[in-house]
Amino acid sequence: MATVFSDPFDALLQFQQALDSFRTSGWLSSGPSARGAFPPINIFRNGDDLVAIAEVPGIQKSDLEIQVVGKTIRIAGSKGVGYGEQAALHRRERLAGRFDRAFTVPVEIDGNRVKAECRDGILAIYLPRAERDKPKTIAVD
Image (cartoon, rainbow, N blue to C red):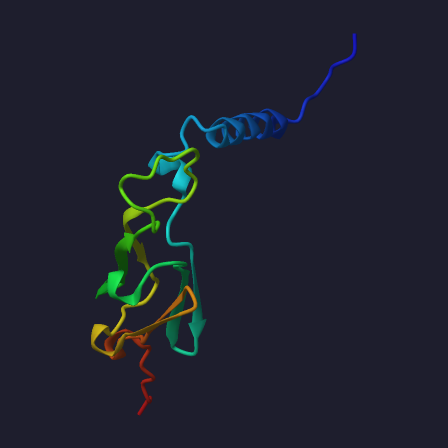
């Protein structure tokens, strides 16, 4: 009798596909697990500083709140959908309401120098590294 080996990752892949299928089937479409992380964000290093780029389509600048404490950045706000309370929904895929997302970066940020701009649904947050967090070069006498 021959020994049959199976790839242990096949079972994990099948399980992941089943979860994805269940999640997109509509059973969880209004729950937070279906939403994913909002807003989606990329963070990259630009010299000593960091830049965070987030997608915030349809959100007004006045509806955004950004806070920086140490190494933690928080983006909060609200998103409307533009129809009245009396509208009878037939399908709901666009999410609305409050959102709140916090993330940690690898360096301490100088909160007094943070700048943010929002244009065409793209939020750019410029996160200058705190001077006390920058490496210091020490001359040897």
